[in-house]
Image (cartoon, rainbow, N blue to C red; front, side, top):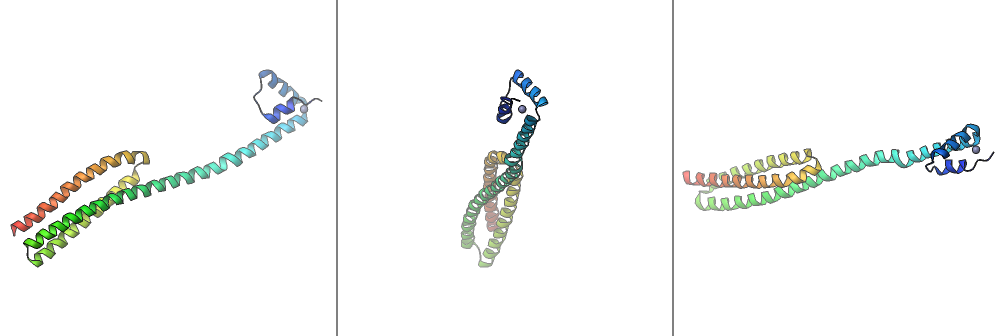
Length: 178
Ligand SMILES: [Zn+2]
């Protein structure tokens, strides 16, 4: 029995014309040797598919996505931390100037009390703001968070200015009302 070109078609797996397909099917019905060859090729293909695609990609994709998500959270956390450190710097500067003003205008006991009050207020506000911001950034999808980051940052800057202004006013009123 002549097995060519049937054998070649089975091994190469190239697309066949309808005429060739008909020849192949006719030959396979008559020839058990080529049927076995075709089954071996199918099994080999399946094994290769499983080895190169499904098993590794499932695990790999998941690991990669997890790593990406972790990196994103870390990046957001660093950004938020950096932002709040500069905010803390501004607050401490304001606080220092305020302390200097109070020191020049109040008695020592009053001065210490006022400094402590304001220090506690500053720390509580910063802590709440940071937790809130980190919560927002960890909840948002990565693509959204970058766009919204700018909006929130400007909003927070605006809020901080009002907040520092309010601190100033409270301290000054305290000094003037005594
Ligand atoms: Zn054959």
